[in-house]
Image (cartoon, rainbow, N blue to C red; front, side):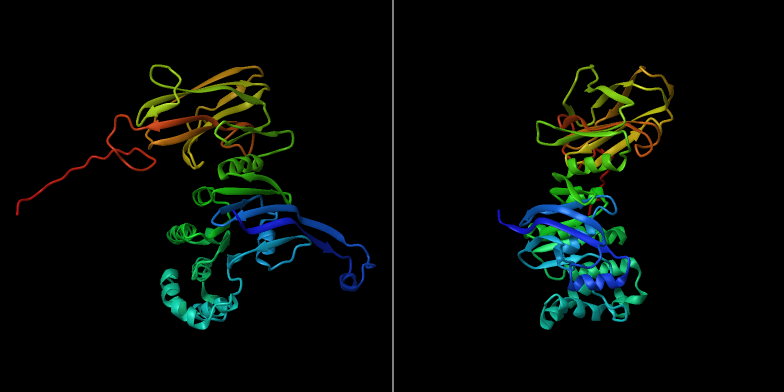
Length: 409
């Protein structure tokens, strides 16, 4: 498939000079005194086919926003090249391209005009833009009186007034209210069905898993991982809690997914199985059936506290339910080196039909950010089938009590 975007060996370096005069000298001659170099991006290469939704993730300072500015052309790369085909629309920073003294209506004409749209086309789309933004009387007020959420409403409405070939959104949706976020995501999904390519930068795992079919992890200015979103986000989660002396390893599973295992290994999972009521290992369970999660672990060092956590995730990697023994007031204390531990968890599989996974964590407190002994994604994979319940839709089995009454005419 022909890519609509190609990033080829792109790098970006910024220079710091001891005197501003040296910066000017460098414009005209290579003999200017050496400057301190700060490479924000290096050796970035990837391509995006038409219609794909790509998430770009990474810690603050990883180079995400800089990469988007290079893609949109608001900044030039120091090395490499970016090539695009089709019309691009981007929301990089709230208010970018807006005049704070203009009203919302005036900014619509100003911004879309700068994007190359004709006045007549903007006029024809104006009513839809106003209606979608739901700014009411503020649409004719200057932007300086807008809240950040109102800025986002106007920016998104303008950026999506005409369906672009490539839509880039950088964190902007995170400042909006939940209602408008859902409304925006619905429009993005509509555009995707029509062939729009999406580039999304966000810290919202649910949004990325729900909207994207590929993810790229940036780490220290380079591409650390490029693959399907669940595996990339699992690796990113491990990276967030990574400390000196800890390891992160990945394993390829038979279904193509990547399992990430991270932690200090002060305690490790020896075995984990899912059992039915008869004590037999199962990989397929009935809706509502009670199942038993058995986990065996070993402490390799003396630990002040040991907590087991687990999370049930759907096939997209979205967490359906998660908890741990810290929250249930069952954390183990004064664990000795060499001690073997067993955890037994029972729960009803009140889930919709589909494939699910269980992630396991051995940690030293409420979460893995403080002390991560071992975090194991995709530790168990199982399926849920509706073998005995009435048909229903969704990811959760929530059987209702329904009463119906009729009155004769």
